[in-house]
Image (cartoon, rainbow, N blue to C red; front, side, top):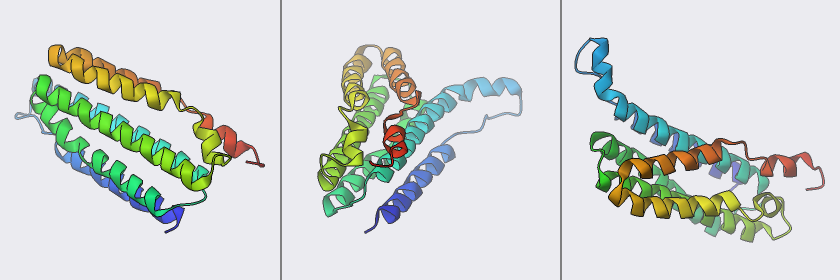
Length: 193
């Protein structure tokens, strides 16, 4: 399978996940503007999850453009990532409906598993392309990836006691990734890479 075909399939899955998620948003029960107050928690959950999916889509795109070889292991690692990303609408809907420790903890668990799956995909791509490859140079030590995993793991424990603080940590991770990641751009700007 070519890199382009894998990327197109992944793009389609992520687009479907985003569409399913927006379908979970509920309209207010009345035509009064005040009724929007009852649905804002769901919208905030949706916005956070949409942001995470956008971050994964963007980084997935850049990472694949740094790779030249796709192996069977890469395909399965990619499917593993897509599986966990496909769980985001479910946990988003649950957390939006019931803002309590169980749903917030489960949401964090899915985010943790997405981050681990992305890390596995990145390492599998490095293995398929070599330690001197553009993707290996781009990823480097992957500090943000590793710290994200640690924050998600910590937030799951915190969710048991303070769900709102756990959500603040999820937002922190999203903000950390919204800062443009120039690792891939620098490698692509170098014609020798």
